[in-house]
Amino acid sequence: MDEGIIYHEQDLKSMLTDMKNGTTRLHELDEERVIQSMLHHIGSTDPELRDQLIYTLFYRFIIEDDCLTNEQLTNLFQTTLKYHLFHGIGETGTDTVFTRAFSTLLLALIVFQDRQQHFLSEADIDMLKAKLLAYLDCEIDTRGYVPGKGWSHSIAHVADAFDELVLHPQLDETEFGEVLEALWNKVIIPTVYTHDEDERLLNPIFGLLDRGMDEHEVILLLECLPATLRVQKQQLEPEHYWHVVCNVKTFLKSFFVKLHETNRQTLQTAVLLTLKNI
Image (cartoon, rainbow, N blue to C red):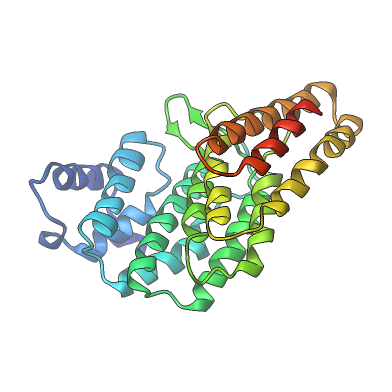
């Protein structure tokens, strides 16, 4: 879209504030210009604009009010996948992470709505799965809260997108394993998670289990963890190795607690046994 018709951040912030407060409605404005400006500024370093206004109002428009057409949602979906999800991928410590992280949240909203309305094609869902898997593998900026700029939380946010994807009926059970493995691999990284990323990564895993994924697939990964850590110990500097151990233990403890609320005793026993062996 021509950047000449994109609203500047402060102008957009003023409009969205009025909409959030109920003094203005989307249909009273240049609707398409507002939506495209929201998408353009989705990675703003202004945490109020990015999180409290753009994301919050996308949630309202898509989920609560259901005021965007299927065509608008499809265009948002395709544009986000093409231009925003991988913006600055491979960078760490830069501001591009906000665009990537909040793009995954927008995709989660759209996929949730598609489960109700069925406007995305099978090819769209296949593309989403492929791109989310690639993004999860490539994302190295795993910061949670960034002082002065608010939440980036890239891993938690993409986990939310996977949480919606695994509930989508077009995701076939033959694809469950690769999604599980991708989420699992993101636990075993040499940067310590400090903002409940472990719990967010568990949500789509439980979604897969609820959709009928064989518990044995998870048990096999659990059984491999001690050997995986031994390899990591040989390959990493001690500090980074212990970062991995911290992530794994935190993940397994959260897994054990969450399993306590379910009727999956075999899996809970396997998690406990793995904890004792690392």
